[in-house]
Image (cartoon, rainbow, N blue to C red; front, side):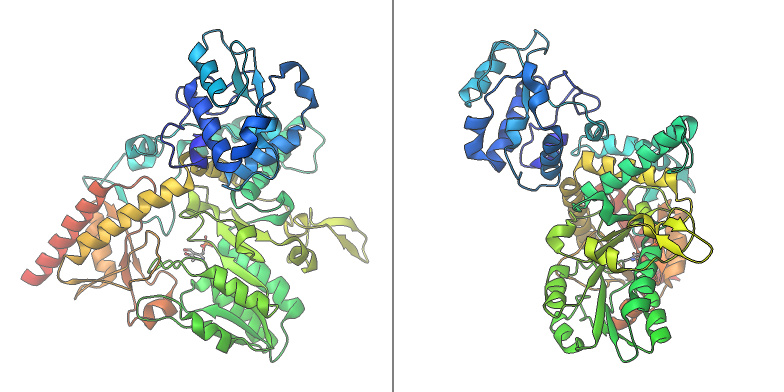
Length: 546
Ligand SMILES: Cc1ncc(COP(=O)(O)O)c(C=O)c1O
């Protein structure tokens, strides 16, 4: 599965038969599919290098390899980036592999310029990072397999099989997260960073490993760019309060967008009010797309910050944040991206985006609630003063003064949410095991199918029609208030959100106060959408009759 994520066009990639998906030291990956997988990766990323580099069979010299480079290369590949150096030069061929390795295996390798002797596998050493990369295999084509990992879905609600279409509000948790948290509390739990005992060390290691997983998942340069917070809301408040108090002055302005969640409006409104600054908003058109041509008009020499959502939570609009960031940076304005609704649905690469901050919540990406992330560009984090004071965020304290810690510790005052940070790490493992591109494709299919089916029902309007969108649909069921529709759907076992979704400016810009909002995730199916469509038809026809 690990390899599968690297190239979705290679259906033979899944490494079948290995429960954890990743080899341990000396336990090579065996079988033609492994060689094919490796070759496919090599051909994609370094076609010329494959012949010259993947030749040595060097089990006895394995210590000579730079394992941290190997880790970096695999990390880079995991995130779809091109390797920076000879990836395959760092993969060794291990002649300790089982004798059952066939000749065709060797022939296969030889045929592709990979020198091989009798019997070999391909392995990488089990470093700390690799231990944390134990992906379970998930057959992405088989939603049933994925659903088995979400026990909560297997229940009746009001006499019907539960359909969870409230994923925009929060996602359900896979066994990986549930069991991982339980194991952590059963065996390893301790406060972190302070104790000199074994459990403190274990907890600290796991907490910091989770930070590393987050960094890898969003392709941050380092785990030092990752601050753990309670969620997106707290993350935006952290940036608004620290940056705002230091840099926003009377007469300045800050820009958000009309599509934004209240979490990206209210904290900036508060700091602007406090500093006598102005809050401006990029407007939207009737489709629910940002009118980006207005951005240049809104920017003035007094614009201090731009904070915008990556994906809107009501119409599902994917904003062109790359363009926003480019425009902002051409004026030397830092940008925060609210990734609450994008993180679980599309690949996020903070370095490619070139954003200054990226914020998201764990609970929207199959992780626990109460944990979230602020990614900050190193120079930006270093510029910011602490937000809250207390333990952990200090280097030295006297009664007169405090020397603050470096980021990220500077922003993590007090005992953090240790277990849920670790749980978030497990959630990211789950997403990586399925492959974010596979999730995106599956959800895109569901969304377009749902839009098509629902648009056939007269008496229901789908709000907005954004150019690029994720799996969020907002509905107006004519003549029936959204909360009533929500309750009627609940009677059919279908959970959707009904209300203003903390996005009142966005809804009002399209002339609505509320919507009924089904949102889809990796475990949803077309059959569930069919049930939603039947339930909506029933609601509409009962309304017509009454
Ligand atoms: C776009 C967006 N931003 C921010 C938030 C706030 O997230 P949280 O409540 O996890 O802090 C949400 C939650 O729905 C959201 O959809």
